[in-house]
Length: 134
Image (cartoon, rainbow, N blue to C red):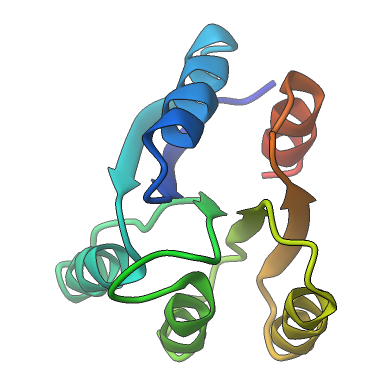
């Protein structure tokens, strides 16, 4: 399996972040793993990366419910960025609200990026499936 250059985790739950990072590191899947506690931190840094011609993360783990800027607000802004490559965005949530699934379908239909929806907790098989397609 080819190694992914950069993965980012956007989640305010330290336990989820710890678990995803631990699984990614145990499989040695990425050269770099960046973490952000809200969508605003992430979108600001990704925008800067684009301005400086630095490659953006190939895989994003995105929580929906976060302070400052939630996952949906992040996606709204992310999809306006001029990114030609196909980014794999994995919505990782504990939500069972049907509205969140509708939102996922809405965003999925608006972009060339691959947007998946996974319920927490994320398991090792999920990690392998997500990163294999990247």
